Image (cartoon, rainbow, N blue to C red; front, top):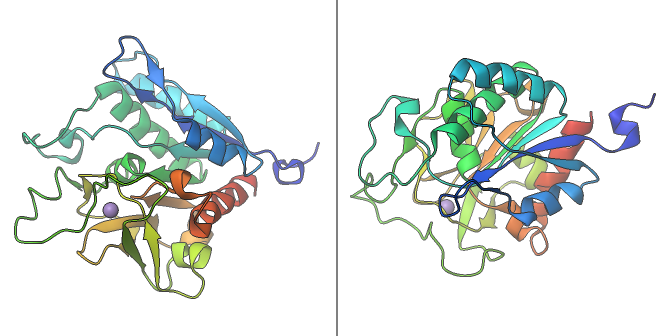
Length: 255
Ligand code: MN
């Protein structure tokens, strides 16, 4: 039997979203599915069953991850602040217990089983929380003395609105901008990584100091685990760095 890499079809789990506005419904944006498909991987959407005991999510997540080659954590609602040891302020948005707990366990299982993880927007935040980091519940409210950049853009999602300054020597630098420097990214968030999880580093930030990407320390050699605050799935037709991150993720999933 051929290895997955030779066959060229790694299976990537893509987390689903709970839509508060539609009863009994889970959703997925097509752009995530398309981005995975275009790397010659198989996108497999992971809906969450109604399990209310975290132990059960843990066992369930381990079984799911053992059948996958990689995990894509998608965007969506906010994260319950109690998961990183804070109380929820009025400016935290809506969150759902089952999605938070399910994705936390998927992250831990993928990390334990050394499967590549790519987190996008909420996915980057969730990855940070699952690995022991914290978030700003609202970047504007919790950084009152700073003039922040436009992190909640109104222009089309394929357009970049601010730069992400890439940390020299990081895994992301090797994957996206071998010459170093910065990339132009889109921005649809009011939360962001505050304290980076142990074993992770901030690998990109906006010029106002807001963290725009995190990655597992040691990059490729110690496993692919990257979270980006922007939405590369919306930019990949027009921006090479956005296409590149999915290609690199697929390569890691196939190896
Ligand atoms: Mn931003």
